[in-house]
Length: 284
Image (cartoon, rainbow, N blue to C red; front, top):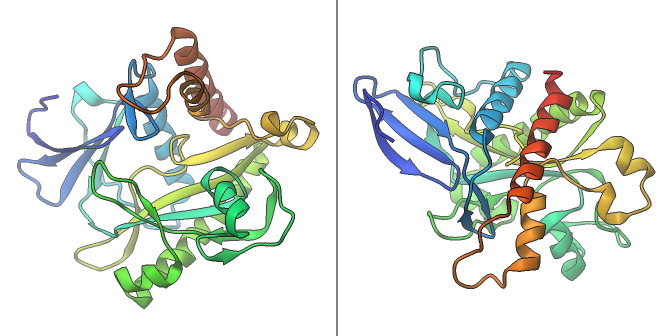
Protein backbone atom coordinates (compact mmCIF):
# COMPACT_ATOMS: atom_id res chain seq x y z
CA UNK A 1 0.00 0.00 0.00
CA UNK A 2 1.27 3.47 -0.88
CA UNK A 3 0.92 6.10 1.87
CA UNK A 4 1.72 9.73 1.21
CA UNK A 5 4.71 10.80 3.30
CA UNK A 6 5.66 7.25 4.26
CA UNK A 7 7.96 4.63 2.74
CA UNK A 8 7.13 0.95 3.12
CA UNK A 9 10.16 -0.85 4.57
CA UNK A 10 9.02 -4.23 5.84
CA UNK A 11 6.12 -6.69 5.84
CA UNK A 12 5.76 -9.46 8.38
CA UNK A 13 3.09 -12.13 8.48
CA UNK A 14 0.55 -9.63 9.82
CA UNK A 15 2.11 -6.16 10.16
CA UNK A 16 3.56 -3.67 7.68
CA UNK A 17 6.18 -1.14 8.71
CA UNK A 18 6.62 2.34 7.22
CA UNK A 19 9.30 4.99 7.73
CA UNK A 20 8.48 8.69 7.67
CA UNK A 21 9.80 10.85 4.83
CA UNK A 22 10.29 13.78 7.20
CA UNK A 23 10.53 12.38 10.74
CA UNK A 24 13.35 9.84 11.00
CA UNK A 25 12.59 9.13 14.66
CA UNK A 26 9.06 7.90 13.90
CA UNK A 27 7.58 4.82 12.27
CA UNK A 28 4.11 3.63 11.33
CA UNK A 29 3.01 0.11 12.30
CA UNK A 30 0.01 -1.07 10.28
CA UNK A 31 -1.88 -4.25 11.20
CA UNK A 32 -3.40 -6.10 8.25
CA UNK A 33 -6.22 -8.63 8.11
CA UNK A 34 -3.73 -11.37 7.17
CA UNK A 35 -3.79 -14.58 9.17
CA UNK A 36 -0.95 -17.08 9.36
CA UNK A 37 -0.52 -20.60 10.66
CA UNK A 38 2.38 -23.02 10.48
CA UNK A 39 4.55 -20.24 9.03
CA UNK A 40 2.26 -19.64 6.04
CA UNK A 41 0.06 -16.63 5.33
CA UNK A 42 -3.38 -17.97 4.49
CA UNK A 43 -6.22 -16.90 2.23
CA UNK A 44 -8.57 -15.27 2.79
CA UNK A 45 -7.75 -12.96 5.69
CA UNK A 46 -9.96 -12.36 8.70
CA UNK A 47 -12.16 -9.29 8.03
CA UNK A 48 -11.50 -6.47 10.50
CA UNK A 49 -8.63 -8.31 12.19
CA UNK A 50 -6.18 -5.42 11.78
CA UNK A 51 -8.54 -3.02 13.52
CA UNK A 52 -9.25 -5.51 16.31
CA UNK A 53 -5.55 -6.14 16.99
CA UNK A 54 -4.70 -2.43 16.99
CA UNK A 55 -7.66 -1.59 19.23
CA UNK A 56 -6.58 -4.21 21.73
CA UNK A 57 -2.92 -3.12 21.73
CA UNK A 58 -3.90 0.51 22.33
CA UNK A 59 -6.26 -0.52 25.14
CA UNK A 60 -3.50 -2.48 26.85
CA UNK A 61 -0.86 0.22 26.37
CA UNK A 62 -3.26 2.57 28.15
CA UNK A 63 -3.64 0.21 31.10
CA UNK A 64 0.09 -0.40 31.29
CA UNK A 65 1.03 3.27 31.13
CA UNK A 66 3.41 2.87 34.08
CA UNK A 67 5.76 1.08 31.70
CA UNK A 68 7.38 3.11 28.90
CA UNK A 69 6.05 2.17 25.46
CA UNK A 70 6.73 3.14 21.87
CA UNK A 71 3.53 5.10 21.17
CA UNK A 72 3.94 8.74 20.20
CA UNK A 73 1.57 11.59 19.40
CA UNK A 74 0.44 12.41 15.90
CA UNK A 75 -2.05 11.48 13.20
CA UNK A 76 -1.96 8.37 11.08
CA UNK A 77 -2.93 8.46 7.39
CA UNK A 78 -6.66 8.20 6.75
CA UNK A 79 -6.14 5.08 4.63
CA UNK A 80 -5.01 3.09 7.68
CA UNK A 81 -6.97 4.83 10.44
CA UNK A 82 -8.04 2.37 13.13
CA UNK A 83 -5.39 -0.20 12.31
CA UNK A 84 -2.15 1.76 12.60
CA UNK A 85 0.02 3.02 15.44
CA UNK A 86 2.45 5.91 15.22
CA UNK A 87 5.52 4.89 17.20
CA UNK A 88 9.01 5.96 18.17
CA UNK A 89 11.91 4.30 16.43
CA UNK A 90 13.76 2.05 18.87
CA UNK A 91 16.84 -0.12 18.91
CA UNK A 92 14.97 -3.41 19.09
CA UNK A 93 16.22 -6.41 21.03
CA UNK A 94 16.26 -9.64 18.98
CA UNK A 95 14.35 -11.46 21.70
CA UNK A 96 10.76 -12.67 21.93
CA UNK A 97 10.07 -12.26 25.64
CA UNK A 98 7.68 -15.13 26.32
CA UNK A 99 6.02 -15.55 29.72
CA UNK A 100 4.01 -18.66 30.55
CA UNK A 101 1.67 -18.95 33.50
CA UNK A 102 0.17 -22.19 32.23
CA UNK A 103 1.56 -25.17 30.35
CA UNK A 104 0.31 -25.26 26.77
CA UNK A 105 1.32 -25.01 23.12
CA UNK A 106 4.98 -25.59 22.32
CA UNK A 107 5.73 -25.55 26.04
CA UNK A 108 3.52 -28.59 26.56
CA UNK A 109 5.22 -30.39 23.65
CA UNK A 110 8.67 -29.70 25.11
CA UNK A 111 7.60 -30.64 28.64
CA UNK A 112 6.51 -34.10 27.51
CA UNK A 113 10.01 -34.70 26.17
CA UNK A 114 12.16 -33.16 28.89
CA UNK A 115 9.95 -32.17 31.86
CA UNK A 116 11.22 -28.63 31.27
CA UNK A 117 10.54 -25.61 29.02
CA UNK A 118 13.48 -23.65 27.61
CA UNK A 119 15.75 -25.02 30.31
CA UNK A 120 13.30 -24.27 33.14
CA UNK A 121 12.67 -27.47 35.09
CA UNK A 122 9.02 -28.10 35.98
CA UNK A 123 7.30 -30.50 38.40
CA UNK A 124 6.43 -33.99 37.22
CA UNK A 125 2.88 -35.01 36.41
CA UNK A 126 1.62 -31.83 34.74
CA UNK A 127 -1.03 -32.01 32.02
CA UNK A 128 -1.78 -29.80 29.03
CA UNK A 129 -3.32 -26.57 30.32
CA UNK A 130 -2.20 -26.92 33.93
CA UNK A 131 -1.29 -23.80 35.87
CA UNK A 132 2.42 -23.57 36.67
CA UNK A 133 3.61 -23.07 40.27
CA UNK A 134 4.70 -19.59 39.18
CA UNK A 135 5.01 -17.83 35.79
CA UNK A 136 8.19 -18.67 33.91
CA UNK A 137 10.20 -16.65 31.41
CA UNK A 138 11.03 -18.64 28.28
CA UNK A 139 12.66 -16.37 25.68
CA UNK A 140 13.04 -17.02 21.98
CA UNK A 141 15.51 -15.66 19.46
CA UNK A 142 13.80 -13.66 16.72
CA UNK A 143 14.71 -15.40 13.49
CA UNK A 144 15.15 -13.61 10.16
CA UNK A 145 12.06 -13.34 7.99
CA UNK A 146 11.09 -16.76 6.64
CA UNK A 147 12.84 -18.74 9.38
CA UNK A 148 11.54 -20.21 12.64
CA UNK A 149 11.99 -18.37 15.93
CA UNK A 150 14.23 -20.44 18.21
CA UNK A 151 13.44 -21.10 21.87
CA UNK A 152 16.53 -20.29 23.91
CA UNK A 153 17.71 -20.38 27.52
CA UNK A 154 18.19 -17.32 29.67
CA UNK A 155 21.93 -17.97 29.51
CA UNK A 156 21.79 -17.75 25.72
CA UNK A 157 19.93 -14.44 26.05
CA UNK A 158 22.83 -13.13 28.15
CA UNK A 159 25.20 -14.10 25.35
CA UNK A 160 23.06 -12.27 22.79
CA UNK A 161 22.29 -8.98 24.57
CA UNK A 162 24.45 -8.88 27.71
CA UNK A 163 23.69 -9.68 31.34
CA UNK A 164 22.08 -6.37 32.30
CA UNK A 165 19.75 -6.22 29.31
CA UNK A 166 18.83 -9.91 29.63
CA UNK A 167 17.87 -9.45 33.28
CA UNK A 168 15.90 -6.28 32.51
CA UNK A 169 13.96 -8.01 29.72
CA UNK A 170 13.12 -10.96 31.97
CA UNK A 171 12.10 -8.88 34.98
CA UNK A 172 9.99 -6.41 33.01
CA UNK A 173 8.26 -9.20 31.10
CA UNK A 174 7.28 -10.97 34.31
CA UNK A 175 6.07 -7.69 35.84
CA UNK A 176 3.88 -6.80 32.85
CA UNK A 177 2.50 -10.34 32.65
CA UNK A 178 1.55 -10.23 36.33
CA UNK A 179 -0.24 -6.90 35.91
CA UNK A 180 -2.05 -8.01 32.76
CA UNK A 181 -3.06 -11.34 34.30
CA UNK A 182 -4.79 -9.55 37.15
CA UNK A 183 -6.66 -7.27 34.75
CA UNK A 184 -7.75 -10.23 32.62
CA UNK A 185 -8.79 -12.22 35.70
CA UNK A 186 -11.11 -9.39 36.77
CA UNK A 187 -12.88 -9.88 33.44
CA UNK A 188 -13.26 -13.64 33.74
CA UNK A 189 -10.29 -14.48 31.53
CA UNK A 190 -7.08 -16.43 32.02
CA UNK A 191 -3.94 -15.07 30.38
CA UNK A 192 -2.20 -18.39 29.86
CA UNK A 193 0.88 -17.04 28.10
CA UNK A 194 2.05 -14.10 26.03
CA UNK A 195 5.06 -12.62 24.29
CA UNK A 196 6.47 -9.12 24.53
CA UNK A 197 8.98 -7.25 22.44
CA UNK A 198 11.16 -4.46 23.75
CA UNK A 199 13.57 -1.91 22.40
CA UNK A 200 15.96 0.62 23.85
CA UNK A 201 15.27 4.32 23.35
CA UNK A 202 18.16 5.47 21.13
CA UNK A 203 18.54 8.68 23.15
CA UNK A 204 17.93 7.60 26.75
CA UNK A 205 18.51 3.81 26.47
CA UNK A 206 15.26 3.37 28.42
CA UNK A 207 13.71 -0.09 28.14
CA UNK A 208 10.56 0.38 26.07
CA UNK A 209 7.61 -1.91 25.38
CA UNK A 210 7.03 -2.14 21.63
CA UNK A 211 5.18 -3.83 18.78
CA UNK A 212 1.78 -5.30 19.64
CA UNK A 213 0.96 -6.09 23.25
CA UNK A 214 -1.34 -8.73 24.72
CA UNK A 215 -3.37 -9.24 21.54
CA UNK A 216 -5.03 -12.43 20.39
CA UNK A 217 -2.09 -12.97 18.01
CA UNK A 218 0.56 -12.70 20.73
CA UNK A 219 -1.28 -14.18 23.70
CA UNK A 220 -3.30 -17.19 24.74
CA UNK A 221 -6.51 -16.28 26.60
CA UNK A 222 -8.95 -18.78 28.05
CA UNK A 223 -12.41 -18.43 29.54
CA UNK A 224 -11.92 -18.81 33.31
CA UNK A 225 -15.38 -20.27 33.95
CA UNK A 226 -15.02 -22.86 31.20
CA UNK A 227 -11.49 -23.71 32.35
CA UNK A 228 -12.76 -24.41 35.85
CA UNK A 229 -15.96 -26.29 35.01
CA UNK A 230 -15.32 -28.19 31.77
CA UNK A 231 -14.48 -31.88 31.85
CA UNK A 232 -13.16 -31.70 28.28
CA UNK A 233 -9.39 -31.10 28.16
CA UNK A 234 -9.73 -29.52 24.70
CA UNK A 235 -12.69 -27.31 25.61
CA UNK A 236 -11.22 -25.89 28.82
CA UNK A 237 -8.25 -24.40 26.96
CA UNK A 238 -10.11 -23.17 23.86
CA UNK A 239 -8.36 -19.87 23.18
CA UNK A 240 -9.62 -16.53 21.88
CA UNK A 241 -7.36 -16.50 18.83
CA UNK A 242 -6.71 -18.30 15.56
CA UNK A 243 -6.69 -21.79 17.10
CA UNK A 244 -9.79 -22.54 15.03
CA UNK A 245 -7.69 -21.88 11.92
CA UNK A 246 -4.80 -24.03 13.19
CA UNK A 247 -7.11 -26.94 14.02
CA UNK A 248 -8.84 -26.82 10.64
CA UNK A 249 -5.56 -26.56 8.76
CA UNK A 250 -3.99 -29.42 10.71
CA UNK A 251 -6.94 -31.63 9.79
CA UNK A 252 -7.05 -30.63 6.11
CA UNK A 253 -3.44 -30.06 5.03
CA UNK A 254 -0.26 -32.13 5.23
CA UNK A 255 1.97 -29.03 5.55
CA UNK A 256 3.49 -29.43 2.12
CA UNK A 257 2.87 -27.17 -0.86
CA UNK A 258 0.37 -24.34 -0.81
CA UNK A 259 -2.15 -24.36 2.05
CA UNK A 260 -5.83 -24.66 1.08
CA UNK A 261 -8.14 -21.66 1.26
CA UNK A 262 -9.96 -21.26 4.52
CA UNK A 263 -13.72 -21.98 4.35
CA UNK A 264 -16.02 -19.04 5.02
CA UNK A 265 -17.33 -20.73 8.17
CA UNK A 266 -13.81 -20.99 9.65
CA UNK A 267 -13.11 -17.35 8.80
CA UNK A 268 -16.32 -16.16 10.48
CA UNK A 269 -15.84 -18.31 13.60
CA UNK A 270 -12.32 -16.95 13.99
CA UNK A 271 -13.46 -13.35 13.54
CA UNK A 272 -16.17 -13.91 16.15
CA UNK A 273 -13.60 -15.26 18.60
CA UNK A 274 -11.39 -12.18 18.13
CA UNK A 275 -14.36 -9.86 18.63
CA UNK A 276 -15.50 -11.71 21.73
CA UNK A 277 -12.12 -11.22 23.40
CA UNK A 278 -12.22 -7.47 22.85
CA UNK A 279 -15.77 -7.29 24.18
CA UNK A 280 -14.82 -9.30 27.28
CA UNK A 281 -11.75 -7.18 28.01
CA UNK A 282 -12.88 -3.68 27.09
CA UNK A 283 -16.64 -3.89 27.51
CA UNK A 284 -17.09 -2.38 24.06
